Length: 535
Ligand code: XMP
Image (cartoon, rainbow, N blue to C red):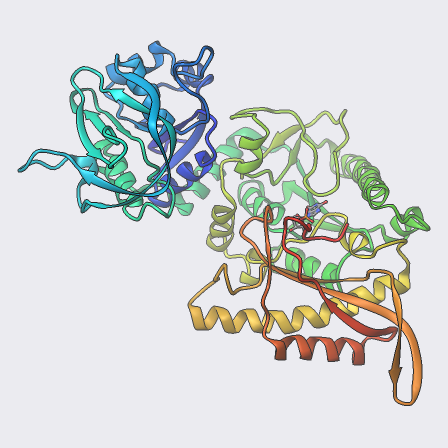
């Protein structure tokens, strides 16, 4: 894309995406590249401005352990491209350059004291502005027992003599600890030294620059062809549409499917944003009748998901055919795929196959369209930044996640219009109260606070009824469950310790305002062992 680039060469460690994110936080573009793909990428694109070799779970001395091919390392050194090895990446470098790697006498895990070992009167550039001793984060069972020829040791811990080395003439740098994690307090400073001072990159990766580059690229690729997009109301598809609209205008044909399983007022609100605020060329498809008919009497969670996925594909095909007739030939399909999906699917770059939809299980396999995935290089937080840069509403950019199968997986048992009404009305009350609470936390703490701001919150209908008393009469009505969790990415979550007064307001409002409910439960389960949704 024309940005200065750091490659994060992936050896399978758990923090690899994090390294790329940290580099991007320095406003320098960074990509995760499999160690197997590095040689082909050099042939195709030339060398980058700098390379970081990641951690990994292997031992370099084992047969078949991942290594950097010698011609790849040679190409970097020959072209003067700086290389920084982290943890396993350090051991890969040491072994490749004639040093020795062995099982460490003492494995180090967690916070560890690091000392500088450089000679008086000299400071390695990598550690510039870093005061040692300080804590660093270690996680290793092997260590470099003998340095390669020409290497200078720059740091040690009590158990690990060679905690860092460099061969400045070859622009080779290596650290055994993990600078990318927050537990290494000077880690970001060190990565900044590598990226700015050693690789000489400038902080040029900005959302404004990204937008310009993408708009130019999409315009050139798509020309006057037509692009189809199924909008979900979520952040990714909306931001992707806003970006592509900038490039092709009304040749972007969007549709939004109301499957009848959305929250209260959601379809209207989302359509208002798309049509009136964003001025997208968008059609609303009201498909609630057919989804509800197919779901009638179905209580098995997986069956419900499958039915919704299949029905979505049918609606999609019909819409694609309709637009094809109306607009005359759709060539491209826009999808809101983001970088973690690309890295996790192992595509590592340029797969052009239609992959399964994030929301509702699979798009038609035989569709003859080319894909446009303008967010495939962005992390979630960058998608939000991009949305803000494109002028989208804060409420949309910071919208809480909502599953593709919608309220169907928040109603245990079969889905009926009556049960949908109860979940919708109780959910609307909950959202109103927690939105207000989140705003207060936001204002007090100066922004989103992962341990206090509630990340996702909704009500569920567990399909149980219980006896209660209201006025002078006995009631036998539904119980509603409240779920409110803290999370970063939905992979794990912790239940939110909401103030009792807030829970009290929520409970009494739901019982008083929602007909058919006489009891409210609060879900105290974290993930794991629970999941966030109930189905
Ligand atoms: P679970 O319930 O698995 O959910 O802990 C983790 C996060 O994913 C969302 N979720 C979905 N999102 N399609 C989606 O787009 C789905 O089928 C789906 N199921 C769960 C859930 O809301 C939570 O944020």
